[in-house]
Image 1 (cartoon, rainbow, N blue to C red):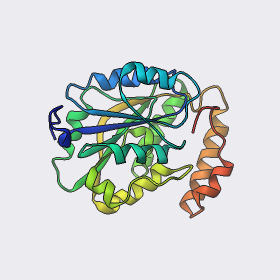
Image 2: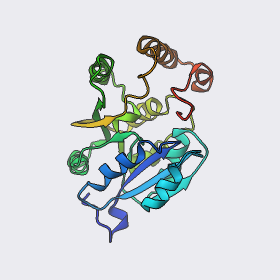
Image 3: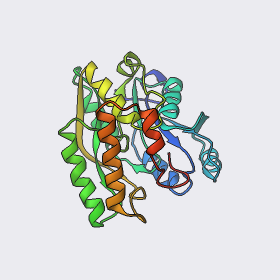
Length: 238
């Protein structure tokens, strides 16, 4: 892959959806800036009402706007991207400095169409440690979530027509369709994501609700219908 700034067609495009992420976007962009090769960074904002847009403009990243919703925003970023490889990174997720090297190495195998990373949470609480463990168990069932920093070859992304504008489980739907195009690689490196989704509330209740929604999704309930049962973890979360 070896992306360079004078060959836009070779660039890996990092696509970050945002909505009211002023509290964490700097940290993510700082980590992206440490990746030692030139990459294209596209942030797609879904109508933030805090200082997110101001921060992004001050940092000089390429900023797009779209309707709110991760699936919609990530697809908008993918359509605008120049890269042969698309990497979808959540605004509260910090990648390792050698992430690009690892992605490049994995995609040297022509049978691999995409992949993701191990996930760690920025908390040492029992709930966070349990989720880290459970994420690794769920991987054996083929479940990969958006906060694991999913990457994909552009041609594979286009073949499956990208992310769907689903209100929930757009990541599970995307990976399920992507696996039909080839192998999905799980890289051993770790991305660190925020534990805000389950801290400050009942972890047991949050986990039970999320598990229930996933069961309904896997037995065929439409994500549009499930969104009515989904309670955002914070007013700015989607």
